[in-house]
Image 1 (cartoon, rainbow, N blue to C red):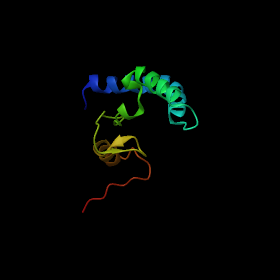
Image 2 (cartoon, rainbow, N blue to C red):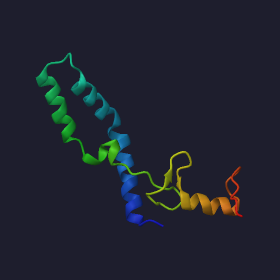
Image 3 (cartoon, one colour):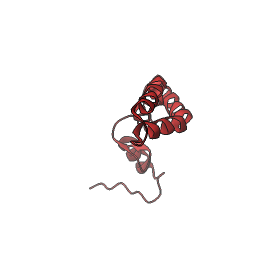
Length: 101
């Protein structure tokens, strides 16, 4: 089980990303638009830099929803390999059979 503070910190980042997603996308579009003047694009970059750092999508860490583990994460299942193995062994995941020989 991951530290509770790490999981809560990641949840806080996800909320910030959702809150600033539209504003960030609009500023990025302005900054990347080659038809605008250099000054306008630079102002958009400055406004983008004023936004909170944790509102960037790349600062979010994928974590297992069962254990909070940050590594060996399956995106499709939103859980780590260890949690997947445990739940599969207990028969809680439909269609998954843990093989042993």
